[in-house]
Image (cartoon, rainbow, N blue to C red; front, top):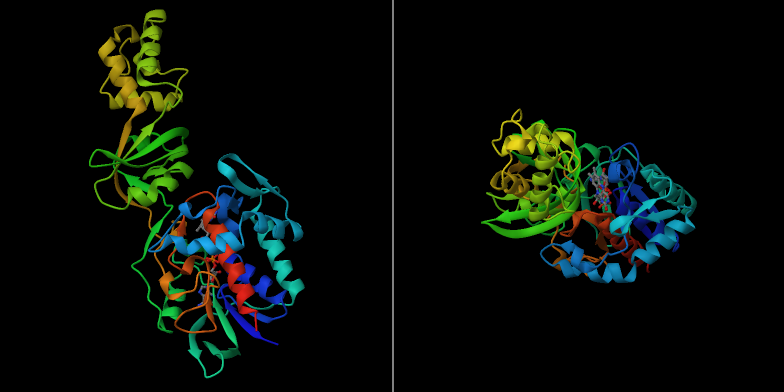
Length: 403
Ligand SMILES: Cc1cc2nc3c(=O)[nH]c(=O)nc-3n(C[C@H](O)[C@H](O)[C@H](O)COP(=O)(O)OP(=O)(O)OC[C@H]3O[C@@H](n4cnc5c(N)ncnc54)[C@H](O)[C@@H]3O)c2cc1C
Protein backbone atom coordinates (compact mmCIF):
# COMPACT_ATOMS: atom_id res chain seq x y z
CA UNK A 1 0.00 0.00 0.00
CA UNK A 2 1.31 3.44 -0.93
CA UNK A 3 1.98 5.75 2.03
CA UNK A 4 1.31 9.46 1.72
CA UNK A 5 2.20 12.21 4.18
CA UNK A 6 0.14 15.39 3.94
CA UNK A 7 1.74 18.41 5.61
CA UNK A 8 -0.98 20.83 6.71
CA UNK A 9 -4.49 20.07 7.87
CA UNK A 10 -6.15 23.09 6.28
CA UNK A 11 -8.66 23.21 3.44
CA UNK A 12 -6.34 21.81 0.76
CA UNK A 13 -4.70 19.22 3.03
CA UNK A 14 -7.99 17.86 4.35
CA UNK A 15 -9.42 17.54 0.85
CA UNK A 16 -6.20 15.93 -0.44
CA UNK A 17 -6.14 13.43 2.42
CA UNK A 18 -9.76 12.35 1.91
CA UNK A 19 -9.29 11.94 -1.83
CA UNK A 20 -6.04 9.97 -1.43
CA UNK A 21 -7.28 7.74 1.41
CA UNK A 22 -10.54 6.92 -0.36
CA UNK A 23 -8.41 5.61 -3.24
CA UNK A 24 -6.68 3.13 -0.97
CA UNK A 25 -3.56 5.01 0.14
CA UNK A 26 -2.38 4.99 3.75
CA UNK A 27 -2.54 8.69 4.55
CA UNK A 28 -1.09 10.59 7.52
CA UNK A 29 -1.80 14.29 8.03
CA UNK A 30 0.62 16.44 10.03
CA UNK A 31 -0.78 19.67 11.45
CA UNK A 32 1.24 22.12 13.54
CA UNK A 33 -1.81 23.54 15.33
CA UNK A 34 -3.84 21.64 17.88
CA UNK A 35 -6.67 20.95 15.45
CA UNK A 36 -7.36 20.80 11.74
CA UNK A 37 -9.20 23.49 9.77
CA UNK A 38 -8.42 26.31 12.15
CA UNK A 39 -8.38 28.97 9.40
CA UNK A 40 -11.27 27.35 7.56
CA UNK A 41 -13.36 27.74 10.72
CA UNK A 42 -13.10 31.54 10.59
CA UNK A 43 -13.54 32.04 6.85
CA UNK A 44 -16.32 34.21 5.49
CA UNK A 45 -16.77 35.90 8.88
CA UNK A 46 -17.47 32.50 10.40
CA UNK A 47 -19.91 31.59 7.59
CA UNK A 48 -17.34 30.09 5.17
CA UNK A 49 -17.77 31.29 1.62
CA UNK A 50 -16.59 27.92 0.34
CA UNK A 51 -16.94 28.40 -3.40
CA UNK A 52 -18.33 30.56 -6.15
CA UNK A 53 -20.58 29.55 -9.05
CA UNK A 54 -18.66 31.91 -11.35
CA UNK A 55 -15.28 30.26 -10.83
CA UNK A 56 -12.96 30.38 -13.84
CA UNK A 57 -9.25 30.96 -14.45
CA UNK A 58 -9.93 34.73 -14.90
CA UNK A 59 -10.56 35.01 -11.16
CA UNK A 60 -7.07 33.77 -10.31
CA UNK A 61 -3.72 35.56 -10.31
CA UNK A 62 -0.06 34.61 -10.15
CA UNK A 63 3.01 34.55 -12.36
CA UNK A 64 1.11 31.94 -14.42
CA UNK A 65 -2.56 32.26 -13.46
CA UNK A 66 -3.45 29.75 -16.21
CA UNK A 67 -1.89 27.09 -13.97
CA UNK A 68 -5.20 26.98 -12.08
CA UNK A 69 -7.21 25.94 -15.16
CA UNK A 70 -6.69 22.12 -15.23
CA UNK A 71 -7.47 21.71 -11.51
CA UNK A 72 -10.59 23.87 -11.80
CA UNK A 73 -11.55 21.88 -14.88
CA UNK A 74 -10.97 18.41 -13.41
CA UNK A 75 -12.40 19.22 -9.99
CA UNK A 76 -14.69 22.20 -10.46
CA UNK A 77 -17.47 23.78 -8.46
CA UNK A 78 -20.02 21.10 -9.43
CA UNK A 79 -17.85 18.23 -8.29
CA UNK A 80 -16.77 20.06 -5.14
CA UNK A 81 -20.35 20.71 -4.08
CA UNK A 82 -21.35 17.16 -4.99
CA UNK A 83 -18.60 15.82 -2.72
CA UNK A 84 -19.66 18.10 0.11
CA UNK A 85 -23.26 16.99 -0.45
CA UNK A 86 -22.14 13.35 -0.18
CA UNK A 87 -20.39 14.26 3.06
CA UNK A 88 -23.70 15.65 4.31
CA UNK A 89 -23.13 19.37 3.79
CA UNK A 90 -26.02 21.28 2.25
CA UNK A 91 -25.02 24.54 0.57
CA UNK A 92 -26.78 27.65 -0.67
CA UNK A 93 -25.79 30.14 -3.36
CA UNK A 94 -26.07 33.81 -2.55
CA UNK A 95 -25.56 37.00 -4.56
CA UNK A 96 -22.49 37.11 -6.78
CA UNK A 97 -22.53 33.30 -6.97
CA UNK A 98 -21.06 32.97 -3.46
CA UNK A 99 -21.65 29.52 -1.97
CA UNK A 100 -22.13 29.05 1.79
CA UNK A 101 -23.15 26.12 3.99
CA UNK A 102 -26.90 26.23 4.69
CA UNK A 103 -26.02 26.05 8.39
CA UNK A 104 -24.31 29.46 7.96
CA UNK A 105 -21.48 28.07 10.06
CA UNK A 106 -17.93 27.49 8.87
CA UNK A 107 -17.58 24.86 11.60
CA UNK A 108 -19.95 22.59 9.61
CA UNK A 109 -17.47 22.52 6.71
CA UNK A 110 -14.61 21.67 9.06
CA UNK A 111 -16.69 18.98 10.75
CA UNK A 112 -17.77 17.14 7.59
CA UNK A 113 -14.17 17.07 6.37
CA UNK A 114 -12.88 15.97 9.76
CA UNK A 115 -15.35 13.08 9.86
CA UNK A 116 -14.61 12.18 6.24
CA UNK A 117 -10.91 11.93 7.12
CA UNK A 118 -11.76 9.69 10.03
CA UNK A 119 -14.07 7.52 7.92
CA UNK A 120 -11.42 7.15 5.18
CA UNK A 121 -8.88 6.00 7.77
CA UNK A 122 -6.59 9.05 7.69
CA UNK A 123 -4.15 9.17 10.61
CA UNK A 124 -3.97 12.61 12.15
CA UNK A 125 -0.99 14.07 14.01
CA UNK A 126 -1.76 17.47 15.53
CA UNK A 127 0.70 19.78 17.34
CA UNK A 128 3.27 18.43 14.92
CA UNK A 129 5.24 21.03 12.96
CA UNK A 130 7.28 19.57 10.13
CA UNK A 131 10.62 21.36 9.95
CA UNK A 132 12.31 19.46 7.13
CA UNK A 133 11.54 17.11 4.26
CA UNK A 134 14.38 14.85 3.16
CA UNK A 135 14.35 13.16 -0.21
CA UNK A 136 15.40 9.52 0.13
CA UNK A 137 16.39 7.04 -2.53
CA UNK A 138 12.85 5.73 -2.27
CA UNK A 139 10.34 8.19 -0.88
CA UNK A 140 10.74 10.89 1.73
CA UNK A 141 11.47 11.44 5.41
CA UNK A 142 9.59 14.13 7.34
CA UNK A 143 11.27 15.55 10.40
CA UNK A 144 9.80 17.40 13.40
CA UNK A 145 11.19 18.19 16.81
CA UNK A 146 11.41 14.82 18.48
CA UNK A 147 10.40 12.59 15.62
CA UNK A 148 10.36 11.59 11.98
CA UNK A 149 8.13 9.74 9.53
CA UNK A 150 8.79 7.98 6.25
CA UNK A 151 6.38 8.08 3.32
CA UNK A 152 6.40 7.14 -0.34
CA UNK A 153 4.95 10.48 -1.34
CA UNK A 154 4.47 13.90 0.28
CA UNK A 155 1.79 16.52 -0.29
CA UNK A 156 2.73 20.00 0.96
CA UNK A 157 -0.49 21.81 1.88
CA UNK A 158 0.94 24.33 4.36
CA UNK A 159 -1.03 27.34 3.10
CA UNK A 160 0.36 30.85 2.82
CA UNK A 161 1.51 33.53 5.22
CA UNK A 162 -1.76 35.48 5.28
CA UNK A 163 -3.99 35.29 8.35
CA UNK A 164 -1.18 34.58 10.83
CA UNK A 165 -3.62 34.48 13.75
CA UNK A 166 -5.25 31.41 12.24
CA UNK A 167 -2.10 29.59 11.22
CA UNK A 168 -0.73 31.58 8.31
CA UNK A 169 3.00 30.84 8.09
CA UNK A 170 5.98 30.89 5.75
CA UNK A 171 6.98 27.35 6.73
CA UNK A 172 5.55 25.74 3.59
CA UNK A 173 7.66 27.95 1.34
CA UNK A 174 10.78 27.03 3.32
CA UNK A 175 10.01 23.28 3.16
CA UNK A 176 9.62 23.41 -0.62
CA UNK A 177 12.69 25.64 -1.05
CA UNK A 178 14.58 22.95 0.85
CA UNK A 179 13.77 20.58 -2.01
CA UNK A 180 14.97 22.98 -4.70
CA UNK A 181 11.80 24.98 -5.35
CA UNK A 182 11.69 28.76 -5.78
CA UNK A 183 9.47 31.19 -3.92
CA UNK A 184 8.40 34.43 -5.63
CA UNK A 185 8.38 37.69 -3.63
CA UNK A 186 5.45 37.57 -1.20
CA UNK A 187 2.72 40.19 -0.67
CA UNK A 188 -0.80 39.79 0.61
CA UNK A 189 -4.26 40.74 -0.55
CA UNK A 190 -7.95 40.73 0.39
CA UNK A 191 -7.11 43.05 3.24
CA UNK A 192 -8.47 46.15 4.95
CA UNK A 193 -7.06 49.44 3.61
CA UNK A 194 -5.72 52.31 5.69
CA UNK A 195 -6.63 55.86 4.71
CA UNK A 196 -5.82 59.26 6.17
CA UNK A 197 -9.20 60.71 5.22
CA UNK A 198 -10.53 61.84 8.65
CA UNK A 199 -14.03 60.84 7.50
CA UNK A 200 -13.12 57.21 8.26
CA UNK A 201 -13.00 57.88 11.97
CA UNK A 202 -16.25 59.88 11.90
CA UNK A 203 -17.98 57.05 10.05
CA UNK A 204 -16.48 54.24 12.16
CA UNK A 205 -18.89 51.30 12.47
CA UNK A 206 -21.06 52.23 9.48
CA UNK A 207 -21.68 49.71 6.71
CA UNK A 208 -22.75 51.19 3.41
CA UNK A 209 -23.56 49.87 -0.04
CA UNK A 210 -21.13 51.59 -2.39
CA UNK A 211 -19.49 51.53 -5.76
CA UNK A 212 -15.73 51.34 -5.29
CA UNK A 213 -13.18 52.63 -7.82
CA UNK A 214 -9.40 52.42 -7.54
CA UNK A 215 -7.84 55.51 -9.08
CA UNK A 216 -4.22 55.55 -10.09
CA UNK A 217 -2.81 58.70 -11.71
CA UNK A 218 -6.41 59.75 -12.20
CA UNK A 219 -7.33 56.60 -14.15
CA UNK A 220 -9.53 53.69 -13.06
CA UNK A 221 -7.34 50.70 -12.15
CA UNK A 222 -10.09 48.48 -10.69
CA UNK A 223 -13.69 48.65 -9.56
CA UNK A 224 -16.13 46.73 -7.39
CA UNK A 225 -19.44 47.29 -5.66
CA UNK A 226 -21.10 46.08 -2.49
CA UNK A 227 -20.65 46.42 1.24
CA UNK A 228 -18.04 48.86 2.54
CA UNK A 229 -17.33 49.15 6.27
CA UNK A 230 -15.80 52.30 7.74
CA UNK A 231 -13.28 51.78 10.54
CA UNK A 232 -11.07 54.09 12.59
CA UNK A 233 -8.07 53.20 10.42
CA UNK A 234 -9.77 53.22 7.00
CA UNK A 235 -11.97 50.96 4.89
CA UNK A 236 -13.00 47.33 5.15
CA UNK A 237 -15.75 45.04 3.85
CA UNK A 238 -16.12 42.69 0.88
CA UNK A 239 -16.14 45.43 -1.78
CA UNK A 240 -12.86 46.79 -0.38
CA UNK A 241 -11.24 43.34 -0.13
CA UNK A 242 -12.11 42.79 -3.75
CA UNK A 243 -10.06 45.77 -4.97
CA UNK A 244 -7.31 45.62 -2.32
CA UNK A 245 -4.90 43.82 -4.63
CA UNK A 246 -5.02 46.70 -7.13
CA UNK A 247 -5.23 49.40 -4.45
CA UNK A 248 -1.93 48.20 -2.99
CA UNK A 249 -0.11 47.50 -6.24
CA UNK A 250 1.52 50.96 -6.21
CA UNK A 251 1.75 53.82 -3.71
CA UNK A 252 -0.31 56.95 -4.31
CA UNK A 253 -3.58 55.18 -4.97
CA UNK A 254 -6.97 56.71 -4.19
CA UNK A 255 -10.15 54.74 -3.54
CA UNK A 256 -13.30 56.61 -4.55
CA UNK A 257 -16.65 55.59 -3.12
CA UNK A 258 -19.97 56.12 -4.83
CA UNK A 259 -22.25 56.29 -1.81
CA UNK A 260 -25.48 56.61 -3.79
CA UNK A 261 -25.34 54.14 -6.64
CA UNK A 262 -29.06 54.42 -7.36
CA UNK A 263 -28.87 58.03 -8.59
CA UNK A 264 -26.56 59.89 -10.90
CA UNK A 265 -24.99 63.16 -9.74
CA UNK A 266 -27.47 65.38 -11.64
CA UNK A 267 -30.50 63.54 -10.23
CA UNK A 268 -29.09 63.75 -6.73
CA UNK A 269 -28.31 67.48 -7.01
CA UNK A 270 -31.87 68.06 -8.22
CA UNK A 271 -33.25 66.08 -5.25
CA UNK A 272 -31.21 68.14 -2.79
CA UNK A 273 -32.44 71.37 -4.38
CA UNK A 274 -36.04 70.10 -4.29
CA UNK A 275 -35.63 69.41 -0.56
CA UNK A 276 -34.22 72.90 -0.03
CA UNK A 277 -37.26 74.37 -1.78
CA UNK A 278 -39.86 72.20 0.00
CA UNK A 279 -38.43 72.31 3.54
CA UNK A 280 -36.21 75.42 3.80
CA UNK A 281 -36.49 75.35 7.60
CA UNK A 282 -34.24 72.24 7.82
CA UNK A 283 -30.56 72.56 8.62
CA UNK A 284 -27.82 71.73 6.14
CA UNK A 285 -26.84 68.76 8.32
CA UNK A 286 -30.10 67.14 7.14
CA UNK A 287 -29.69 67.85 3.46
CA UNK A 288 -29.05 64.16 2.60
CA UNK A 289 -31.98 62.95 4.72
CA UNK A 290 -33.64 59.96 3.10
CA UNK A 291 -30.80 59.27 0.67
CA UNK A 292 -27.77 58.10 2.66
CA UNK A 293 -27.37 57.23 6.35
CA UNK A 294 -27.59 60.36 8.53
CA UNK A 295 -23.98 60.15 9.75
CA UNK A 296 -22.75 59.69 6.18
CA UNK A 297 -24.79 62.73 5.10
CA UNK A 298 -23.31 64.89 7.86
CA UNK A 299 -19.77 63.83 6.99
CA UNK A 300 -20.35 64.70 3.33
CA UNK A 301 -21.62 68.15 4.36
CA UNK A 302 -18.50 68.69 6.49
CA UNK A 303 -16.22 67.42 3.71
CA UNK A 304 -17.81 69.95 1.34
CA UNK A 305 -16.83 72.70 3.81
CA UNK A 306 -20.47 73.61 4.49
CA UNK A 307 -21.60 74.74 7.95
CA UNK A 308 -23.93 72.04 9.31
CA UNK A 309 -26.00 74.59 11.24
CA UNK A 310 -26.71 76.79 8.24
CA UNK A 311 -30.18 76.72 6.74
CA UNK A 312 -30.89 74.30 3.91
CA UNK A 313 -32.82 77.13 2.25
CA UNK A 314 -29.44 78.65 1.38
CA UNK A 315 -28.55 75.73 -0.86
CA UNK A 316 -27.82 76.91 -4.39
CA UNK A 317 -27.22 74.93 -7.54
CA UNK A 318 -23.43 75.07 -7.28
CA UNK A 319 -23.39 73.78 -3.70
CA UNK A 320 -25.94 71.08 -4.53
CA UNK A 321 -23.71 69.90 -7.36
CA UNK A 322 -20.69 69.92 -5.07
CA UNK A 323 -22.51 67.80 -2.47
CA UNK A 324 -23.84 65.42 -5.10
CA UNK A 325 -20.36 65.12 -6.63
CA UNK A 326 -18.90 64.23 -3.25
CA UNK A 327 -21.55 61.60 -2.54
CA UNK A 328 -20.86 60.05 -5.94
CA UNK A 329 -17.08 60.25 -5.63
CA UNK A 330 -15.86 60.46 -2.04
CA UNK A 331 -12.09 60.00 -2.21
CA UNK A 332 -9.93 58.12 0.28
CA UNK A 333 -6.14 58.33 -0.25
CA UNK A 334 -4.70 54.90 0.58
CA UNK A 335 -1.68 54.95 2.88
CA UNK A 336 -1.26 51.22 3.48
CA UNK A 337 -3.11 48.16 4.72
CA UNK A 338 -3.66 46.14 7.86
CA UNK A 339 -0.84 43.70 7.10
CA UNK A 340 -0.55 39.95 6.54
CA UNK A 341 -1.98 39.11 9.95
CA UNK A 342 -5.32 40.49 8.83
CA UNK A 343 -5.13 39.60 5.15
CA UNK A 344 -7.08 36.71 3.68
CA UNK A 345 -4.65 35.56 1.03
CA UNK A 346 -0.98 35.60 0.05
CA UNK A 347 0.03 37.06 -3.29
CA UNK A 348 2.96 35.04 -4.62
CA UNK A 349 4.27 31.68 -3.46
CA UNK A 350 6.09 28.69 -4.86
CA UNK A 351 6.63 29.00 -8.62
CA UNK A 352 3.93 27.05 -10.41
CA UNK A 353 6.14 26.44 -13.45
CA UNK A 354 8.00 23.95 -11.23
CA UNK A 355 4.80 21.85 -10.89
CA UNK A 356 2.63 19.92 -13.32
CA UNK A 357 -0.76 21.67 -13.45
CA UNK A 358 -2.45 18.38 -14.46
CA UNK A 359 -1.30 16.48 -11.34
CA UNK A 360 0.17 19.01 -8.86
CA UNK A 361 3.38 16.95 -8.83
CA UNK A 362 6.76 18.67 -8.64
CA UNK A 363 8.76 18.72 -11.87
CA UNK A 364 11.94 18.90 -9.79
CA UNK A 365 11.24 16.20 -7.25
CA UNK A 366 8.98 13.29 -8.33
CA UNK A 367 6.66 12.07 -5.59
CA UNK A 368 6.38 15.56 -4.08
CA UNK A 369 3.07 17.42 -4.54
CA UNK A 370 1.85 20.86 -3.47
CA UNK A 371 -1.61 22.39 -3.35
CA UNK A 372 -3.54 25.38 -2.03
CA UNK A 373 -2.20 28.76 -1.09
CA UNK A 374 1.47 27.72 -0.78
CA UNK A 375 1.60 27.87 -4.58
CA UNK A 376 1.80 31.18 -6.47
CA UNK A 377 -1.95 31.40 -7.12
CA UNK A 378 -4.36 33.77 -5.42
CA UNK A 379 -8.02 34.22 -6.13
CA UNK A 380 -10.49 37.08 -6.00
CA UNK A 381 -12.73 37.68 -3.01
CA UNK A 382 -15.89 35.54 -3.00
CA UNK A 383 -15.04 31.89 -2.37
CA UNK A 384 -12.36 31.61 -5.05
CA UNK A 385 -9.46 30.88 -2.71
CA UNK A 386 -11.20 27.99 -0.99
CA UNK A 387 -12.25 26.61 -4.37
CA UNK A 388 -8.58 26.67 -5.38
CA UNK A 389 -7.73 24.81 -2.16
CA UNK A 390 -10.41 22.15 -2.87
CA UNK A 391 -9.55 21.76 -6.58
CA UNK A 392 -5.77 21.65 -6.21
CA UNK A 393 -6.03 19.54 -3.02
CA UNK A 394 -8.28 16.96 -4.66
CA UNK A 395 -6.02 16.76 -7.70
CA UNK A 396 -2.89 16.32 -5.55
CA UNK A 397 -4.58 13.65 -3.41
CA UNK A 398 -5.91 11.68 -6.38
CA UNK A 399 -2.64 11.71 -8.27
CA UNK A 400 -0.47 10.98 -5.26
CA UNK A 401 -2.62 7.91 -4.54
CA UNK A 402 -1.87 6.49 -7.99
CA UNK A 403 0.74 3.78 -7.86
C1 LIG B 1 -9.88 35.50 8.07
C2 LIG B 1 -9.90 34.79 6.74
C3 LIG B 1 -11.11 34.64 6.08
C4 LIG B 1 -11.14 33.98 4.83
N1 LIG B 1 -12.35 33.80 4.23
C5 LIG B 1 -12.40 33.15 3.03
C6 LIG B 1 -13.65 32.86 2.42
O1 LIG B 1 -14.72 33.12 2.97
N2 LIG B 1 -13.62 32.23 1.19
C7 LIG B 1 -12.45 31.88 0.58
O2 LIG B 1 -12.49 31.32 -0.52
N3 LIG B 1 -11.26 32.08 1.17
C8 LIG B 1 -11.21 32.69 2.38
N4 LIG B 1 -10.00 32.87 3.00
C9 LIG B 1 -8.79 32.32 2.34
C10 LIG B 1 -8.72 30.80 2.58
O3 LIG B 1 -9.00 30.52 3.93
C11 LIG B 1 -7.34 30.25 2.23
O4 LIG B 1 -6.96 30.63 0.94
C12 LIG B 1 -7.35 28.71 2.34
O5 LIG B 1 -7.62 28.32 3.66
C13 LIG B 1 -6.01 28.13 1.89
O6 LIG B 1 -6.06 26.73 2.12
P1 LIG B 1 -4.72 25.92 2.41
O7 LIG B 1 -5.14 24.57 2.79
O8 LIG B 1 -3.78 26.14 1.31
O9 LIG B 1 -4.11 26.67 3.69
P2 LIG B 1 -4.66 26.71 5.18
O10 LIG B 1 -6.12 26.56 5.20
O11 LIG B 1 -4.03 27.93 5.76
O12 LIG B 1 -4.03 25.40 5.85
C14 LIG B 1 -2.65 25.21 6.00
C15 LIG B 1 -2.42 24.40 7.25
O13 LIG B 1 -1.08 23.95 7.28
C16 LIG B 1 -0.59 24.04 8.61
N5 LIG B 1 0.88 24.06 8.52
C17 LIG B 1 1.64 25.02 7.95
N6 LIG B 1 2.94 24.69 8.01
C18 LIG B 1 3.01 23.48 8.64
C19 LIG B 1 4.09 22.64 9.00
N7 LIG B 1 5.35 22.94 8.72
N8 LIG B 1 3.81 21.47 9.65
C20 LIG B 1 2.52 21.13 9.94
N9 LIG B 1 1.46 21.91 9.62
C21 LIG B 1 1.70 23.08 8.97
C22 LIG B 1 -1.23 25.29 9.14
O14 LIG B 1 -1.27 25.30 10.55
C23 LIG B 1 -2.62 25.21 8.51
O15 LIG B 1 -3.55 24.56 9.33
C24 LIG B 1 -9.95 33.50 4.24
C25 LIG B 1 -8.73 33.65 4.93
C26 LIG B 1 -8.71 34.29 6.16
C27 LIG B 1 -7.39 34.44 6.89
